[in-house]
Amino acid sequence: MAKNETTGNRPTEDFSAGTIAWRSPSNIALIKYWGKKGFQIPSNPSISMTLSDSYTETLVKCRPSQNSGNISFDFFFEGEKKPQFGQKISTFLEAVFDIFPFLKNFDLEIHSSNTFPHSAGIASSASAMSTLALCLCSMEQQISGSINENNDFFQKASNIARIGSGSASRSIYGGFVTWGKIDSLPETSDFYASPLKTSIHPIFQNLRDTILIINKNEKAVSSRAGHGLMENHPFAAARITQAYQNLDELSVYLSDGNFDGFVKIVENEALTLHALMMASNPGYLLIQPGTLNVIRKIWDFRKQTGTNIVFTLDAGPNVHLLYPERETKTVRDFIKNELLADCDENKIIDDKLGEGPKKLK
Ligand code: DP6
Image (tube, rainbow, N blue to C red; front, side, top):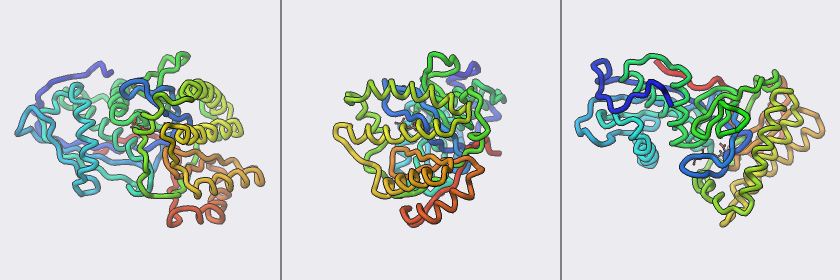
């Protein structure tokens, strides 16, 4: 929690009306967060890579409130009022109201937009909730007259983002990021994410992620519901043990530059995530025939050519294809010749490891 936390302030003169804006990227988990042990506390620690070009920009305009006491906001997504998103924002603002009591003194106008199409099937909660958390923390900071975006600032933003969406806690930092308490790593916490301190081998430093859009429709079972189904899941305990082991191994491979080891863990995590969904009660399937076609083709191609590529999945049918920058030409040709046919309207999104959020002027 930030040391300079201020609560309950009325707006200072400089901040009686103001505008704050942040850009924050999406991320893709390599070690998956799946299941919770209490309110937004992960059952196991996770590791993700922050993306670069798939991001949300959020601008918050604040005016002194006319109806003091309540949370008052209007939400616009890509210029239009979107009631279904507004409801999520409302739930989030209510959940953080005790932490930011100054909210009752303002009417907020929140404008958000994504660089990736909303209907691309890319999870936007990580980038959306992390930008909003950063805006709220900046607002608090300006009210208190502080100007430092120091470690405490980002730690608090990560904690707030987690309340909106667990995976959003990791989008506060660039590079490889971990969230969830690991006893051997004192900087880790269940409440906020932190940059992975392991040294990262050059082969992973410019990792690329091409997202193959297998189906752009909204998924049938939300991640929130999926986490819920991990309670009383017959394999929950084994999954938690496996996640800790995979995390330990992956950290070593990231530092040693062992790409084969990286492939083994990252694909195991992706397939386990979907196996857990299938074995839930009730069971469900988010992968689609196109997902399986692509996975088989990736396995064949890797075997035949020895190219360093690996797939991962989030809670949906789309495939994230990860590879070192030096493989870009080979992988682009492979995608064009073999994988594009399995993509919805030939749609892919090219992205890469990114540096994390940016405050906008
Ligand atoms: C499969 O962060 O979307 O992408 O905390 O309920 O908002 P909530 O869930 P969310 O879950 C993400 C699940 C995942 C794996 C991951 O990102 O670690």
